[in-house]
Image (cartoon, rainbow, N blue to C red):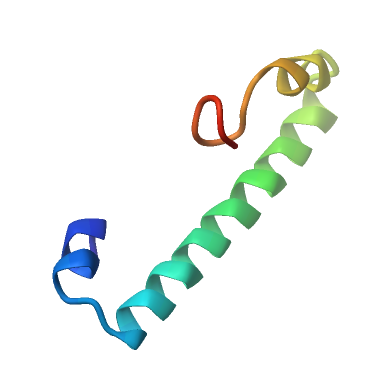
Amino acid sequence: MSFALIIKNINFLNLLFFGFIIVILFLKAKREEKLWSEKTPSYKEYIKNTKMMIPFLL
């Protein structure tokens, strides 16, 4: 389900589903960062200077 469909058909279930997807993607990104940090020591420096998902926000 895309963000446009959620906006077009706003209801509780769509918002709940969208929130669930956002949480899952965030947890997946954190896990991936941890794995990269263990594999590549220089990755810790990289994440200090780079935003996680949206430039200038997250």
